[in-house]
Amino acid sequence: MVILSTIGYILIVIGTIFLFLGSLGLIRMPDVYNRLQAGTKATTLGALSTIIGVGLVEPTWFWKTLVIAIFIVLTNPIGSHTIARASRKSGIKTTTETTVDKYEEDVLNNESGDEDDLAL
Image (cartoon, rainbow, N blue to C red; front, side, top):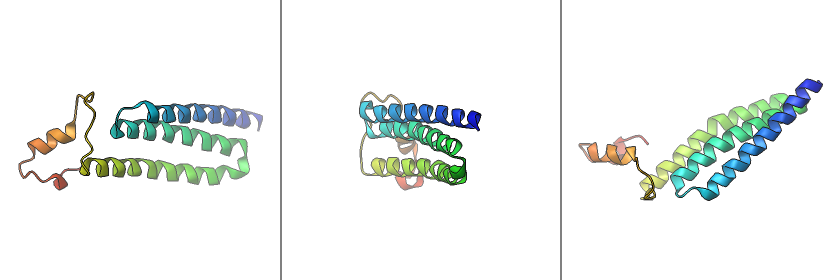
């Protein structure tokens, strides 16, 4: 049990570091699309590490924390995709520092000109 508890505390520390870096990315990134990237990737890994770490420290909570972790894995990418799609549809542009915009290239190359046909 001491080994599982130690691994749990290590995962909690790793998770809090990733959560901190993700929040720092939300502040430092220039536009909504870059902020989504920082927020989704880092905070998903941080939350998973922290939650699984808590499950290892408190073994009676392990199955509950596993269900929460699965829920986060399923919902974070979907929520991020939805926010990015809504931002794009409402006309929020990328920053001038962005060099590649594959969605804009697809819209320009689309013959019908209908943006709804394109997946984000």
